[in-house]
Image (tube, rainbow, N blue to C red):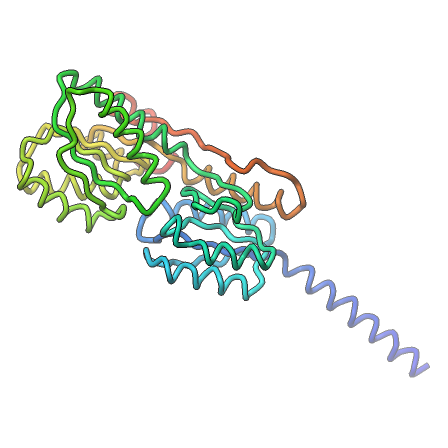
Length: 307
């Protein structure tokens, strides 16, 4: 009888241990280029909410625009045995060693917002239509300045998002000879970098007519620099559709922003992650539409939150 009880207890312990292991659920990792941009905070909140709704967990890391640090973060998540990784690369090419580490471990990477160069190493890319973002800003510029003018560009050439946005905007400029690009620099998508860069450009080109910004934080830095120089009437475009940008448009400080939806990118990214882990086939590229917000339609979107 005693032996039977010991055997029964051992079986119960084994069953319970399997139950506990199963209850732990899946573990996901996430690393974005910087959490200093509210866009990524909103996206991460959407991903976290969707993951936790399934009883699973999300580990979020911030490389703070350091490509080497981001590679290390990916390698750490691989070592922790996460089930999948959500990645927004600091540098779309330099991140390759991290991609390969995850690939060799059989851990799928869901590339969100900004694509990587080595697409073969990621399972899926969920990103805004960034070519369209540059295009709609350029087309709006043509409508507002039919006679043309001098153009300044503040981009972010180490990210695919920045490359695409600026490429299509520059395409519009190149097809309309009344516009001339007089200065181009990198803001790294950061307000605190954009503002001093713009202050220097103002000194050299006080007669600029348009500033195309890679994102809304860059546009905010440009607005501050132009206000400090008491310059008015310059068209300022950004990309994101952030609450700050929509407020600036409403107040007449900014011309337009090509609105993304970090909430939808996050939700779709999670949906794809679970499908991939279930063995389902998904499209490699999943574009999320953008829409230009200007003074004409900003009230439709509101200024209190993200779309």
